[in-house]
Length: 150
Ligand SMILES: Cc1cc2nc3c(=O)[nH]c(=O)nc-3n(C[C@H](O)[C@H](O)[C@H](O)COP(=O)(O)O)c2cc1C
Image (cartoon, rainbow, N blue to C red; front, side, top):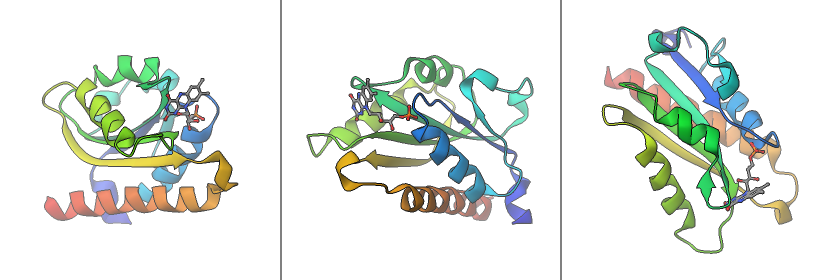
């Protein structure tokens, strides 16, 4: 785990009903102990000192939430991993389209180092444990890839 802490990493998230917050906490655990995990309302003053940001947001009426749109535009020259929670869409390409739009909010100069979707399927019952395990895996795998590329 110690090696993974070599790259200063933070998890930022936007969450209205709490789904993305739970996923963000799982992501932070997957990155490694002591990884800060904060909402967009509590971005630390030293945000510029972080090399890598895991950014969590959700889809509302077809678009990423307004706060995330605003903050994504301000992230410069960082490695960024995006994770999103959204309904399972009615069209097979829905998830890909939403993800592409989110990536397009980032200014040039950011490097996208990972993307991950948690599709919300209310009809499937409580999937929380599995969702959190998979999100933590995504984070651990992304960090592993980043550290071995250095
Ligand atoms: C008012 C409202 C509108 C939504 N619109 C969409 C949508 O257009 N597409 C979609 O995929 N999910 C949509 N969702 C689902 C949310 O993206 C999903 O529930 C997400 O996990 C919420 O994240 P949060 O719990 O962190 O706030 C909507 C949810 C709400 C409450």
